[in-house]
Image 1 (cartoon, one colour):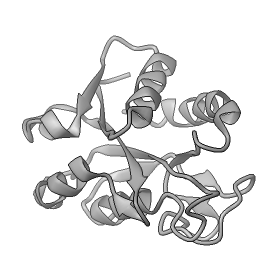
Image 2 (cartoon, helix red, strand yellow):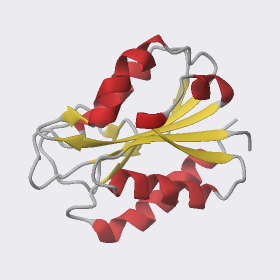
Image 3 (cartoon, helix red, strand yellow):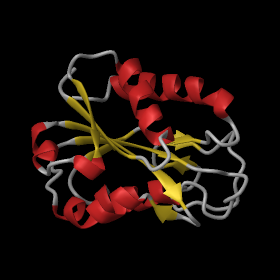
Length: 168
């Protein structure tokens, strides 16, 4: 497996925790974690595989650090890279905007010449609406630590197993 950058934005720590758990599951010395609040744009150039993670804050808002970084992301060349996304949300309290930030990240990268991997079926999730719902599939791994923390481990393991062979 080639170099993998896991870039996350985390306000309360849950997204950072999930990023660390993904890195552990990938079990590779070439996996590095980066907080988007402290990242240098060159990281995007140095890694052929990117895993981008965010939480959804408020009513469907992109996590603050990702929101600040988004203009730079929109200018970043992702041509030829493999990109996987993950997002955290609260399906009970925010059923109408569940993991909307994942959908926002997806929209930012989908037309940038990268190969997107890691879409996950919406089956097993209870929500009303989501910008991350691509028609029966989420744009990436979805975690609901607020209501279903007991499912996090198996969701991460299944997702990592599915994307590992697709990483360059």
